[in-house]
Length: 457
Image (cartoon, rainbow, N blue to C red; front, side):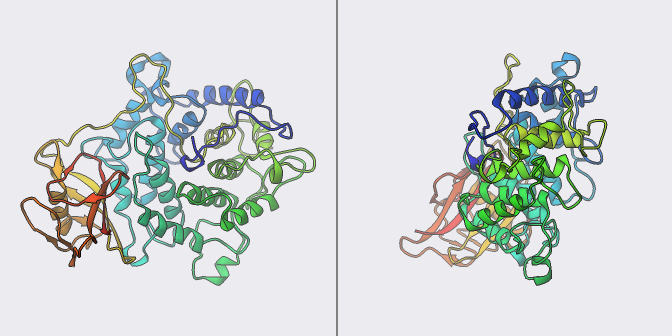
């Protein structure tokens, strides 16, 4: 996996590193064994409260396919199938969902080998996230006060690539989110859960280890290089929190596995080795050393606090994912179960079944509209014209598309939202991150397609 995919393989460590590849391999093996023990009898991981579904991101980082995780060897209840069924249900996630519900599901569905845009005929998690775009504060997803919603939007939309490994979302969207991520970086180089942009007292407040790891990962999976000034400052902030005799990061609530796991995952996502250079203390300890020291072996679980006498499920997930070299999601490993595919996905629309599609409209002058378009297809495919027509009255947030010319039939789209083609500067369309081409009403749109329209050359 590349750094942009949110994973960094710790397979050939320099001599200065203190946790050897063999120790890391043992940690991964035992950690996977413990996470398998968390599976319910019905095959599930997701549940109420602090959900264990994050186990899918840890399994993938450690090289275990979710479809291979079964209760008592019952392949009919494998973890991937059960999770996909949950995400497809009309009652999921709740009567009052928030954007992080869909972001968490996107990251974990991707790691489990479920195409998040094609979970089922009715469930498109990418479109679900698009529906929380903040039109008045472009670049934020969900209420801007809850900055973590925007951080995890970046992690999900950029980290959960297509099955072919392509970033789904257009550069214009990535740029808007990156601007917000940068604007919320605190003076000390880190980030926190709440919004800091435009608030000098918040920008001057102490940052959080956890969110610093997540935010720097969000920047890196959005295409920001690890040599960028903001990443360098985040790296310096983490270095300043290192505990010399253990290699731990001293988090806001003290030394703990979860905070250290998030910080290491942030470094992993940015391709920064957490075992050398700035993260090797003068006493020869690293953050990975600390995490492995919190693991019970051969049981494999990680404790939350160094003083704890038993493992914590959530700490074990965060610890394993970090030690295994993962960011906040990873591409699904190839299954070992005979006949099981690496990916599962809805192949076509179901005629008469309501669904959503993710749509962006870039006017070429800095104006970007983002929305989830609700439509009920009448066949196994639909057309770009039908999607744009639906967007006029059934988009969340509204206003994504106001007018489209021609308003019916087929042919080239000559005007959108009052902006007309002019010479070689025309409306162009892209699907799932492919190259932009002439936008036509008859262009075929398939289930789960992430659609981008752009006015330009």
